[in-house]
Image (cartoon, rainbow, N blue to C red):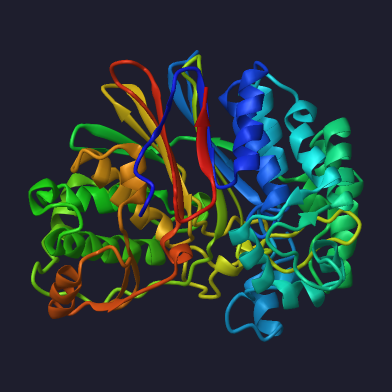
Length: 523
């Protein structure tokens, strides 16, 4: 990858996938806001300028280090299934699996309530203040970025087929790169949320419109489903990797997969093997397979988990799993469930020492493909990840969270915050996080180098995607060990961002993925 140099600043920094959104976050910091204010302002703009990936019809998760409290906090702002949802309903409806699109793939959107919860507890600005940049971009229009235009085009037919989808088309087509796109309905929706607060979304006319939209399409939502939505403060999970404490969200997210991969890998000398060597890649790919087998078997709403998630990445268990890895032979016996790719990650830091790792997502491109016509709200399709296996902890049930791919990460060193990192990419998120952490800790890379370095993306079975920058010699050696080496477009390897706090000077060192069109920006 071409981009090698990190962004370095002293007083504040934001990193995201879109410069307009990053700038909104930095402006919030310049106007006296803190890292929470900046992260939400950035996410709100992303929902306008990258509507395929993120919006106010999606879910959110946040890891936050409070410099005042000297503590790390975690907020789960994911939604639940309708109270009327059940395995019996799905069977009567003839579902062989949970629908990938449409109203029955929708869970209650949790992001807006998550924003309000974060601002009320740790923000310094009001919801109205942090939404102003997003309102401006929706009302006045913004030039569509190149990659965003490509993603938009992929969903053109789906948007045409939906009554509200016309809100996101120009003359019946997706907007082109460089074209100005205006979204007056979304501007109006954001304005009323800014004026009335998040309660208007969950108790007021927005909830009523979303329920009417659901009823028209044969969905199961009622006003009670929205009124009972809650964001939860939860205990983050952590594991030590070579002297660094890695923090992740607990279930219902797949954050434990990062920790399990790292604990398995801790028994290999990745530094001596060399970055992106055949030995290092083989060990990481095999560790990924083992951790994902646990994910697919165990991950669910934390209230329904059948195991203690901490047992999955314990030292003793990691040693046992490590013993299953054959260093000269790939294993193909760990199946995976499919994952979406449309998510956006934000890292933010302020001059007071607060650090935010924030992620929000529609799941797949334009989520469920259902757009409420009056409000312009794109409803997520997170419910697709529910299981229809009655014996699985992630089986569909009333008022239940589904398994989530969203996994913001944070690293501590010597009890102090060291880095916030994360990425978009569904099932690729934990495996790329593990690669970036190894790049930082094992290979001594800077944040930008750790992000830009070539990646693997294990897909399923023996199939593994390798980026072009990985040498032919390494690819041939992995093939000899039994890996089925394939390529992949840049999107299939995720889009990552990171902010690191220099342990000596306290300077903020940021990186943004050259696979995306975003940036890190500080002052």
